[in-house]
Structure formats: C-alpha cells, structure tokens
Length: 349
Image 1 (cartoon, one colour):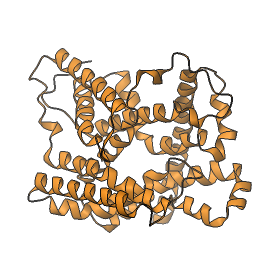
Image 2: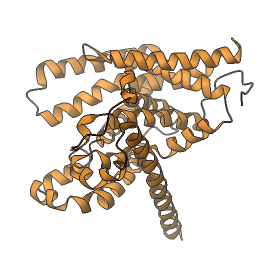
Image 3: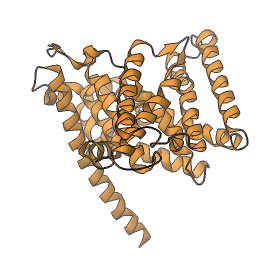
Image 4: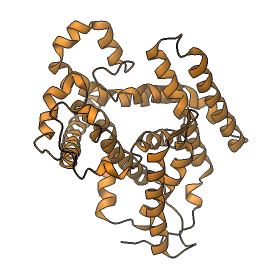
C-alpha cells in the first residue's frame, strides 16, 4: 500500500530494511562465488550472477549503517563501545563454539591453539571466512567518538577531512608498509581504512538528516517509486563495473544513492510483504552474517554445504542457503535472547 508521507521516514524499521537488502546482496556475493563450492560444481546455467550486479555493495551498506547508527548513540563512550562489541561477539561465539568447533576439532589441534584463539577474537578468519566485520566494527567504536566530537561544529568540513586522512593513510599503508607489517596485520588495517570514509559518511548523513529532507511530494508517488527502483538498478550495475579507483572505495558515492533509493521506496510503500520480510532479515542480520559462513568456510563446508546442495542449479542452491540461514538464525536468536533474559532476571533477583 502506498502511503501519503511527505518526508522519508528513517526509523528503526527502515534501518532493518537497509540491513535486509545488504544481507541479500551478501548472500548473492558469496553464494555465486564458484571458489566457495567443492567439486562437483553446481550448474551455472542461467545464473543470476550473469547480470553483472555489484553484490559487493553489501559491505558498503553495512559500513555506512555503522556510522549512521552511531550518530544516535546517547553516550558515545567506552561503555557504549564495549557493550555493542559484546553484542556482536555473542552470536559469533554461539556459532563458532556450537556449530563450528565440533566439526573441525582435528584441524584445530593441527593448527594449534594460537590460531584458534585469533579466530575467537576475529583476527583470523580460518574458521569463519566472514568474521572480519567484527574487527571493523571494533575499530569504528574506538575511533568514532573522536570523529563525532569533532563534527559538532563543522560536520561537513570535518567529515571530508577525516575521509581524506583515512584515504591518505590507506595509500601510505599500501605503498610503504604493506610488505613490512605482515600480511594479516596489513589486511586488517587496509580493510578498516578503506571503509572508514563510508562509515564517516553514514555518520554525517545521520547527523545532518539528509535522507529525512527528501520530499516525497516533489513528484507523483508512482514516479518517485520508479526513479528509486531505477536508481537501485543503475547503482548495482555501476558497482558491478567499478568499485575502486586508485584504492578509493566508490561505495562512498554509491551508498547515498542506494540507501536513499531504498528509503524513498519503503517510505512510499509502508505496508507490504516485501517490507516486512526485509525487516525480519535485518533483525536477524548479525546471526545470518556468521551462520551462512558455515556453508562456505573450508573448515566447515564439508559438513554444511551438502544441506544446500540438494539442488544442482546454482540459483536454487543460493535460495536454499538463504532460507536455511534465515530459519536457523531465527531459532538461534530466539534461544539466545530467551536465555539472556532469564540470566538477566536471575542476576537482578
């Protein structure tokens, strides 16, 4: 149903919708990667991946939303940072210890406890290919309090200056330090610096309320909806062609267009099945992020991948992966939330 809103509404539901879209892009990014499948390969005929869409925009989407969400934190301090980092670690540890470790004990013994402990704190991705988001998030929680404080007086100028410094450090790292600080440390620093401008941009957009300034009445609603869909498609196609220029992440330009188009579309249509489905996916996004890695991480995919390989066609494999991940994540989150509530009540009593 199309609603008569005058302005874009970027509330908690919209945040989850954006995360939901980000997760779908991530599922496609990983699900359509032939390197993640053991032989024999699924059938790639009429693959959705042949459209050339920029599925890697999923990373920029979540990076942007880190900054966007941080803008609304009441207390931008160490306590806030630690509590949110812990919230991110809980689903990761649940999946690591309950669903990963039992199926790769021999490999853990041969690799040594040191490597496993690095995986526990997400500084090594051998047992979960996609756990790197944790160190990116921790980096943001450590640096954004200073950026947010600096942005109070001249938000645009400071944000652009921080982005320029971050890109400068990234270039310096790639040219002068990459071969001297170790591959793992260099990769961690590079990923953080590469996406930090996108994160700061998200902080700026929330601080200034740019999305909420969009007037939905400036054009007929049907035309606004068409323009939003076309914008999404064009951004995905552009990102599929080019994502970096001299190391600069073009998500810096793609994200306002992508997320703005999503916000316009679902501010216009506020009562439909797609909207509710994306909200659910967004609410489960953290669990889904780490759970779907079980199907593709080499240490665990020997056990989990056959579950989604009941189909031969790659499109059906990816669809099956999404459904299984959603159901399993919902069950895990429900149990963890219930146990957390019981423990909290017990501790309070």
